Image (cartoon, rainbow, N blue to C red; front, side, top):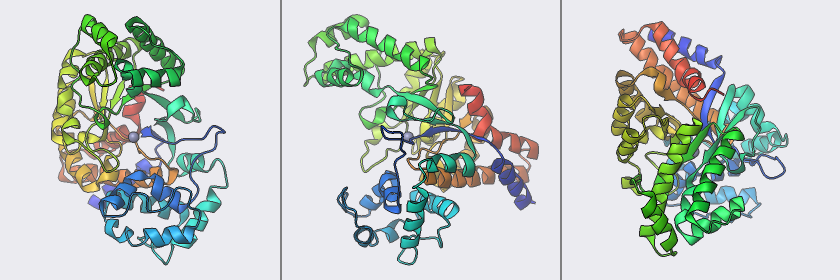
Length: 414
Ligand SMILES: [Zn+2]
């Protein structure tokens, strides 16, 4: 009985054209996708790399220019057994099994060469990643977070990362804006006009969301600052003045939220665990966003990654505010067990139309592996609820389709 419902939900989602809310699939200037062998997938899915470094592996265990695969394998193989149980490793293996026919459950001496050769062969096709995403993972739309909107717009919808725009409060920040956008910002009015123009431009270019990765560089304490104070701070900024910089950053963030409302652009916010081997957990707690949710009821906020390890707090924020949504992107890949635990509770707390999912991967094989894990965990939670009788089967099916397609489709309206 339980197995039947689970199988039905898997079959339903196997046929579903997915709406994937968050990826990082990049191309170079000539339009060629990055990637090409097993070592690239392991190195550039830097989540797994971070776990390897956490286990003791030197961060640059091989030189980025190293071409000798045998040598790379010799350097990598002592560390891989440390992470075979990690979510990141399991996600990559699931993708490599499904896409490249990898034998076994671990990447080891018995299979790496054959697997590497298969991946190399596949990447000779310049459209390989798109084929995997479309045909294997059956994604219809994916929001892509890459600089410069360099993406195939028949599948990808751009999100626009706003973080560098906040840098008006320091000479280095203004320099970066000038480099990217060729706009010298001599006065505070120049800066505000630039922000206004830039956001209108990205909307006109098809951006469906703004994105911020705040906790990678500061906390969410975007204080309400008067324009007089911000103007004074802008005029007084020198490289060393973090106090002035923060005042301008805070003002700019509020300015951008006002513009997001005007342009009807949702704001995707990184919350919880960071990538790589760094974190400052007090900056990752979405509770600090609470004042913004109170102040901007007309702005649509999407909280990424379930906020883990602050998933309890995040759940209550999403439950409470009609304009705050929960995106499971990255989360099942981090840990299936954590996702299962929280999703089971969240479905009792949060209206079902507020959940979405995205892969948060840098290579197509990893999107697919994460999809398989996410599909499994979401279908497990929903089928178990149906078996316990707390949800009807038809509602379980509708909620699953909502998480992987319909909720995001309604929300982003592509
Ligand atoms: Zn991401």
